[in-house]
Image 1 (tube, rainbow, N blue to C red):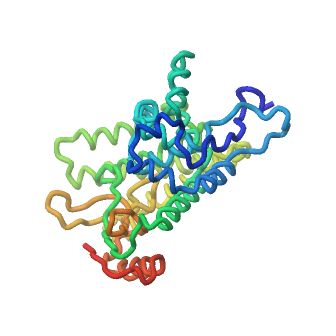
Image 2 (cartoon, rainbow, N blue to C red; image 1 turned 30 degrees about the horizontal axis):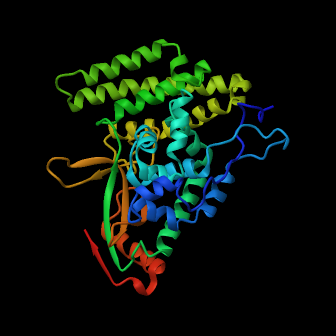
Image 3 (cartoon, rainbow, N blue to C red; image 1 turned 45 degrees about the vertical axis):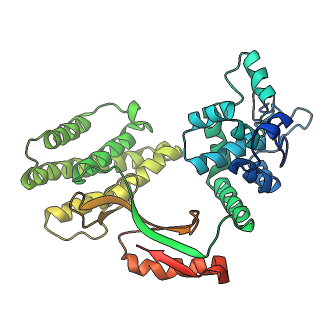
Length: 368
């Protein structure tokens, strides 16, 4: 039974809604502290309802399972992570040492003391925070973010009179030039399908993998990475990629059971679609043809090269993002763009969205 003892936790809910965890903390911390104010005006019932939706209903109400982390602590730390942009480990350390954070998460000094006396490391650990976010999922986290934003706006903490707008690039760690590393990924994933494994560590280093690794090493360890060397290595790797992709297709046709593994099916689909486009674009480049919407990342094919026009870094690889902020420093809106659109063309839509959000309060804007 998953709901016995150490199984799936039962939803605990709020501990002390809209109240400090103890009169001791209430007397020590100034009412003007930002976390005291934040705790006081947040609608914890709304946040609690969002958190509850991420828990399954117990099959046996008489045996509901172990208690989960309370909403005050679990959701409270999730919000603080976004506010302060710190690691889970530092966040856990704060909730055991910082009185204001304890008060925000409804944790009393007595609870910390009892935890220590029992020989436990703490009330919560860093891995549990990861589990909470995974449980909420992207949908739950976005719903909580929107609820948090609405509550800040309702209390007039977010002031929309002034719009501050900027467009930047979210840079990805991509090795330039991209051909060699991209083709190497295609070959590796096609070989995973051939061998019927879903983890790279389980793959046997076949002759094709050894050849691909050798070619990549030849290029990346060369003193002079000339265009001629890149073209030579790319041609050989394209041949290996075509050969391995054909073998992967043959393995799928012969073994129907391969497609029964959803993970392996996803790997093959990625090789066939993204890998096929990568091989075609490298072949086009070798034929001196112009390539449009060039893929530079195997795992994130939407990423593009973003010319910056700066001497120290003329080009970045990533996604373009437009970020809108209120005059008092809150992020009010954002948008991600495929390719490298002109920044001027993005301005009207963002201004209109800010106008719809704040209405007559919107008076001025500044953009870069």
